[in-house]
Length: 249
View: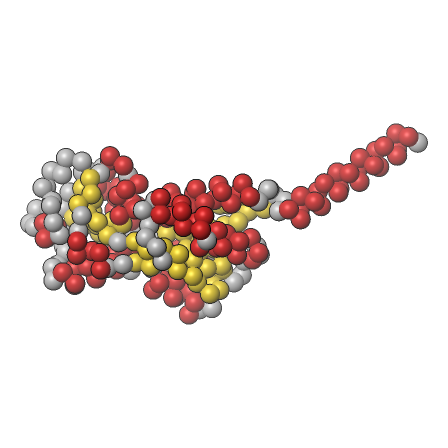
């Protein structure tokens, strides 16, 4: 009888522990879709979030904002989405697929070149020289839209040898030596360390991308999703983002 009572008590104890774990988060996954340029900062914020939420894992999907928006429109299982500009997020608000986007960071473009800068790029105008292999993002991607606005504001015309689907792909072309220069965000050039050199573009300072973040309406983890948004938009998130080179909202 004592053995049976002990076993029953053990079952109750384990059941009670399971319930407590469920209330504290349990084995749950928060899925965050985020623009490729946010990778370093968001991975750090994901670790911070997991540290404060026992039993919760943050799973990221990083890609070009337009690709992420398309996936959410097609029913992808995402809880949070952070894009690199307001236009792409606007597609989801227009479809009533996200809740109240909040701006949490800003970013601008720079020219990333190989460390030895073989094409001698020193200015925005140099990116238009014949023979300079320039790579940009595709026009529908936020960094591509920014590049188009930059060209229009500066009165120049870019003729890229390749248009990529994310800023990470542009950077990789420069790192691999397939491009003489790539228009990327200042945060990506900074994050690449000594793999690239960055050419300051004064003209780009007035072409600013504002980054919005929102919870996805169909998320089954609305409370966790909102808490992650609060982390990103709060003082701790601002500190991590500033450390990665992002500007204030």
